[in-house]
Image (cartoon, rainbow, N blue to C red):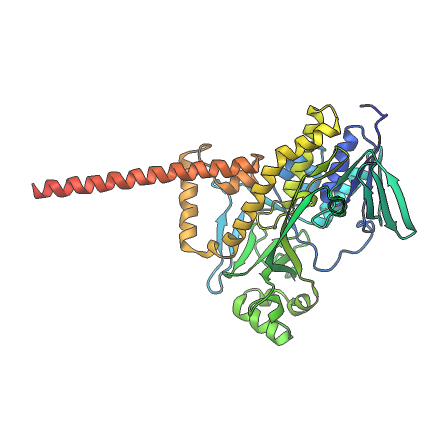
Length: 444
């Protein structure tokens, strides 16, 4: 690779930004990685903001390409299915895959971010600037203005890439220039984190499952951590009689959880304190277009297409963005003015597909997983997968255990449903015909 290339700026040293810096440095680019926060490897994590990741095949595929997958997976906890917690009765396990051996992996967001930061910092040509908050950008020249503890500083880059999350400052600058349009669709739901500590040094719940407490219009999930705790996340309405706003006093909090999450109460000694002091986060979908301007400024990951977290695909999708951008640069001979539009062309439909699937999965997780009808449908689906290996594959397996493009997943699943529907209709018609013939025979 040539060493004469001009510096590329990546704004945002989160998961996608750090991975992107690694891929670009591997291509021979000098990279400046800017982050508004202090170095997260030396600071303290904001309370109640961890949201563990469910790392699956798309994310692992990206990490393999830079040789980081084995290191990251050392602290991963595989979850092979959902453990459904009813209000009364015993929890029920629902396998993610027909074979029962495939898993999504519970990963600490902070630990993964730190591993990617270390990997980026170790590469030649990468410099990282923390405490740099982007407050100005000239898309025509690549000139950036940052607020820092020492005052405002100005930097310039040949290409500026925004990997700075759903509240992207880069996207905000492009919006201010009239260079794109955006829509922000927020749910009337928020999230709040709780903690289940270890009991006697061991996990209080089965660490091989993603635990779900479906409650119709709301739910809680819990993911295991390497320290044998669980991070629980409440997904509740933001308004109404059963919302975050409706519980104030410690007594009210205790009564509510004793009624709706009775098995949680003895496992969470800090329940009231966590509930009262951890913040409520917002949930929404970000859409914008275009994702790039003149081959000089581009967006990827949540900065271009943030989604709700109910398919566990936010980080996986952002990592897949990085892989696709790298592929586009290969095909375009590192001509950014060609690669960035091609990247958007290839990824936008896929981003929209997973955004829609994530919203649909929220309804499934909070409501349908506890339904006998849903559970019967899942059993039929697994039976079809066993009977038609490779020909019938569930949507969940295609999303989580393959790199099939998200838009193609939706198309394939629709084709499968139509085919199964046609077979079922034919079977019903055949049975009806046989019944009619049998009736005639008896009359004769």
